[in-house]
Image 1 (cartoon, each protein chain N blue to C red):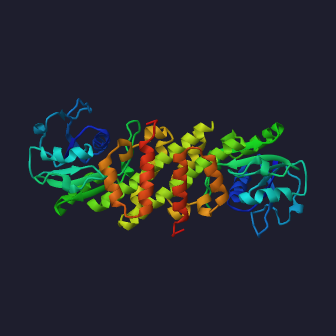
Image 2 (tube, one colour):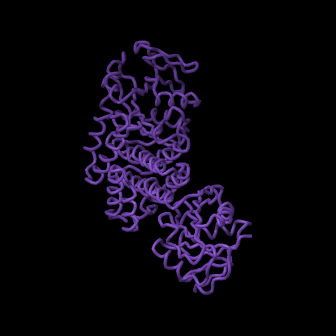
Image 3 (cartoon, rainbow over the protein chains, first blue to last red):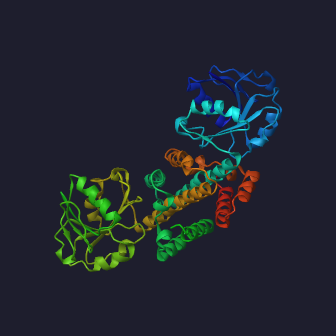
Length: 248
Length: 248
């Protein structure tokens, strides 16, 4: 049984807690939270000096609080991991054994997440700690990857494109539908299929549309149709980017 | 039994044929194709004057060929529909009864499509033809919508954003992964969840990330990380668009 203490009580912390609770290989011995927080039978502590001995401390707090809270830990030479995609392993205080445990997924408060399919990106400062970290990851997910801080940074940037920016394009589609009194619901099967296609085809193979076909007439008609300057600019830059794509 | 003739043998035509063949309410009596084309037991004709009498002729050809082929049809006063998202119903020749039968989906040669979940956007020039068109749509799909040519145009533009442009963002994510020797596979669960979230949350509710949080430090680190000028420009314009979003 791997004993884990979770430091933090936000979105990622809560999803990790419910995943570890369901695993028979891990035990959450404590959750540290500054604010009031209830999590079933798991003991919650509000001061760092109340933290008991664990095999692994997982810091799941906002990016800019990681360095500080890791320096405030009242113990040394224990295994401490943060969960951020964009913070280097070096941000952790050197008095403890440093690691990263980064689940690559978008977590929503109002949506359950199946942890089994979530890739977990792992890094340890010392090779001898990797085994325990990997066992911990595999207790909740089928996919554990050894990923360096540099690689993780590139994954995080990619994730901004395929998650944050993609969602914003959904938002623009929604806005255009609203303006024209069309139910956004009509686009949902297309949105789903666009994502599903990528599970089996490369993005190059899956690319379709007026930009790919270089259908100037349709592109101009669309630009004329869009009255919003911002939507026009985004249409132009993405159309050009598809047209310039040397791999097509 | 609704008798249908399909005019065209491309991607959309083929998907329509296989959907109608599976329905017990429709019969494909002929397929017109200029090129050699085999489609099971369905008779294929190569000249428009060989077309027999049908309840509905569906023109599934490229956008710029619709007007011409509809003017070449050797009969009058029959129901003729095109399948394009971006062409007005008025492009069809007036000697026949005009209609639009636009399935809103991205069709790939190497991927089967479940027509049942595909929204079909319907329009008829004459109200008395709508019933037959709707019955035809409902014989293969659970979702038929009455959509005007103007509304259809807005749907087509939205579809470019949520399908073509989204796929291009997947492509950029893939490029960044390749450059940094990270398997693109690691992003697939995130891509799928980003789409699935939109089935139950609005795009506003689903939006996360550094732009939404106005996390300037991470945004600058990402811009510094991106060496490709085009990727930088797209990152900037989409980040600004999220930040300027008044509804957030």
